[in-house]
Length: 583
Image 1: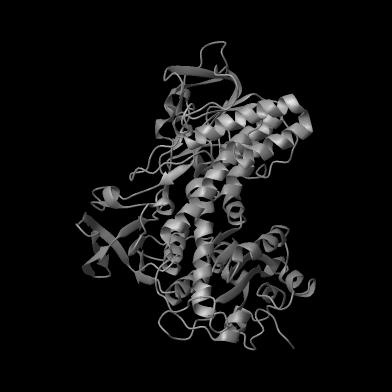
Image 2 (image 1 turned 180 degrees about the vertical axis):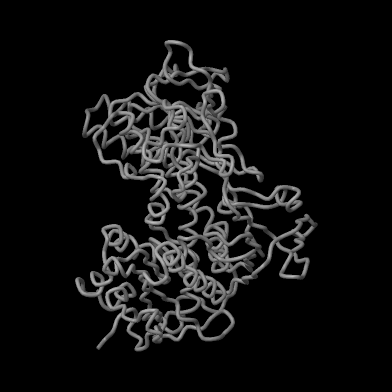
C-alpha cells in the first residue's frame, strides 16, 4: 500500500502538471519509498539507488560529492538554474556500526535528533519540577524518578528522521540525480570535462567514471573524532559518539559524557533531564573559544549541576574496559586516578573532516595539515584546483561548522558556477575580517537552560578592541514562572537564577554592540531577531531607547538593560517580573 505522504505528493504534482506527470511521479515516489523501507523488488536505499528514471548515468554539468546540508543546497540551487547535477552520497558506518539515510549529519545524527531529545528532556524536567506547584500533579506523576521510556522516545525520533530522509530524497530538483555511492577524484580524460570522479555503481557493482563538464563541489562534512588507542585504550572499541547516541537500541543507563564542547554539554544535559545518571567530564573549561562568553559558560555549568548532572572539572578518561556488567572507566580527576563503572561512555571531543578517501592529490587539491581541511578561497570557495569547490565542514574557512553556514555556502557556490549576480554573503571575507565574520554567525547551545550568542565574548572583545574601549551591560534574573513556584534544584537547594543577559559594546563606535549573550529558556528562538540587529550595527541605545519590550518576557531584559560592568553596581534584578519591570 502506498503511504499517504506519497499519495499527497503525487496529488500536488497532478494538480500542477497534469495526470500523466502525476502518475509517473507517483511511480517514482513509490520506488523510492520501497528503497527506503527495504521492501521486496527494490534496491535497499542504504546500499545505493539512483534518483531518476534512467539507470544509465551520463556525464553531468556539475558533480557534487556529499549529500548533507551543503551538498543538497548546492545541488538543488544548480538544478534550479538549469544545470544537470549528479549528487553522490555515502555513509561509512561508525566505530559502533551506526549508519543512516540521505540528508547528512544535521538530519540524521545532529541538529534534528539532538533538538527533539532536548525538547523531550525539558518536558520531563519541567513536569517533575513544576507540575505540583501549578496544580497539575493530579494528571502528571511528579514522584517517579524513573527515566523516560527510551524505546518510545527513540522510535519517535528515528521515525521522524526517516520521514526527512524520504522528504529530502523526493524533494531533489528534477535536474539532480542521486547516487548512493562513495566517489573519489581522478584525472579527467582530455575532452571529457574539467573534473572526473570514480565510483562503484550501486546497481551493477561495477567501477565507473563520471565526467563533470563545468565544475565539481566537495561537501563531505566531518565525523566525530575519537581518542586513539594510545590516548585512551578502549575508546574506539566501546565509546559512542553523536553518530550513535540518538539511535542506541538500548537505554543509555549511567553515562559518562567526555568533553566540554557544545555537543557534549547538550548530550549530558538531555540525558540527565531524561532521567539517566549522567556525568560530564571537563578537561579544562566548559565551552571554550572567543564565541562563548566565560561568564555565560559558567552559568551553563551551574545550570547543568542544578539539573542533576554531575559535572567534574579537570577530568578525562585514561582507559575503558568492557566487563560483564557495563564498562569500567579509569578516570584522571585532578591529581587523582579513580575507577568507576558506566553503562555508556559518550565522546564529544571534536570532529574531523572526511577528506581522506577523496584522492585529492591526484587533482592538485591542497589540505591544511593543521586542520585537516581543504584550502579554499574564502569568498568563492574554490580550492587550489579552480574547477573544484569545497563547502561546509570540510572547507578551511574558520567559519563555524553549522548547518545554516553550509547551506548558504552551497547556494553561493551554485551562483559562482552559474556566474549569477545574486549577492554572495561571503564576498567581502578576507584573512583580516574572517574571525569577526565567524563570530557574527549566531548559535545556540541547547543545554537544559539554553545559551544563545552572537559576536564577541566580553574577554575576546577586550583583547581585540582594547579593554578601555569595551563596556559591558548585564543583568541576571529568574524567569517569571520559576519565581512564582520557587523551584528547587536537584540537590534540594534553591534553584539558581537561570537567566543572564549581556551586551558587549564598543565605546568608540557609539557603543555599537559587538557581542550579545543570553542564558535562559528558548535562547535559540530569542537570538534570531537580536542577531539581525547586531549584524546591522545596532548600538546599546538602539536596544534601550528605540524599542519597547514585550511584557512579561525574558527577552525584554535587553530593552531595559542598565547596569554596566564599570559601574560596579549589582546586576542581579529583583522584583519577580521576569526579564522586565512591572513598575
